[in-house]
Image (cartoon, rainbow, N blue to C red; front, top):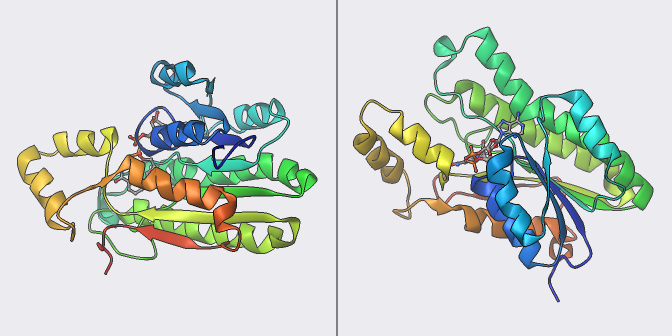
Length: 244
Ligand code: NAD
């Protein structure tokens, strides 16, 4: 049997990249997967695996509450949605700051707030939030608001872990380095010199290669499953040694 047999797993931002790899991994491990995203066409590709695919904009509080109300039980919540704004503080206008906080942090507040009451009622559940090594762990150049939001995700995760430890609910976050995903490729292509940008990304990888989405999904699976039953409030680094 799979490691997630009979578990209900809810994911945000599951149409591509890490969220998608995580959804596919949970399916392989026997979970009932409810995957959401705003990109419905791409998301729907998961339907052939038996995934329940739902349109959900994590910046829309009413939509988040309606989504949660439609799901009776949630064993695992993986909050994946996030956006990388490039720039120093001087490059970051208030609208960029507010957008990044809304999508990267407030979305997780909304999702956790909507779904935690179910986990309390069930007397159990696991939350995995997407942070980054670019956070309180490492100052990455030109990632001012991104790093600030991902540091906030670590704080939010620890606060939830502390408040609900006696309800048999665990909350952890993951802190990847550079993961090869469609958005990373897009960010490389958007640079004035993509070849140079690719070399720069590789040059900071101590293992000489990028992380794969599957390697991150393996960690998410571990934190979501009972194999990590004594781990809560942790920020798990998966960066091939970048932050060493
Ligand atoms: P991605 O950026 O390729 O895809 C992001 C997904 O989020 C897309 O499918 C998009 O449609 C969805 N999305 C965007 N806005 C949304 C909204 N308002 N509501 C719902 N969904 C929305 O994915 P990725 O690179 O795998 O990144 C996923 C997460 O991992 C992000 O939080 C990112 O910050 C984090 N992360 C990525 C890396 C990396 O190197 N790729 C490293 C560390 C952390």
